Length: 265
Image (cartoon, rainbow, N blue to C red):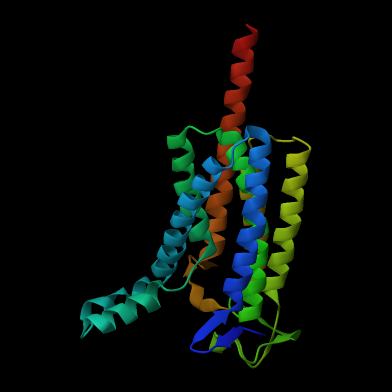
């Protein structure tokens, strides 16, 4: 498609542009929703910034873990410059699930330490995440990464930054996932405005997204992202995330039910 602009010596990638559009669309919305309920937005902004650090670390770390077979190259580098180049190649990519898990962990710790209303903060985050990711996936399509399998009716990349994507028609899986994310955003935003499942919207996201991602992964063609037990890394993580979220929902529901029973005694 159109990977980006060359401005002098600098290359401005469409993935980065779309990601910024997602950031400046999704997170101001979340801050606005939080401010309407609390009168303050700065606390949640702090949480998002800390979560962003966790996201950055997590997405690159998980990418590096998918390349664990290449770690040995770090130990036989002939110079520091070569070590840096190899390190950048091994850890330079990103995996969304790594960023999601890293961001949620870092943000969760921040909410706990700052003693913020966790139910409201996580609900606002649940509204923002799929909206942000929907725009980011458009960036993936424009840049040609995260591409789909070959399909005679698909889109043919000719100048993708990922060479293996070029030359054959492929399923525009990036746009399919983007559409799925926008629909998920619409559902969660509707639940938020209707005050339904208050305090559990992040769980709703973590139950629905893994199912959609697991299915969409069957049409992904970028096999370099890694596989575990015959499933792609993202499919394997989808199972773990869905299972953990379901257990969390059941446990918290039982605790809430027991508190009601104890309060009525």
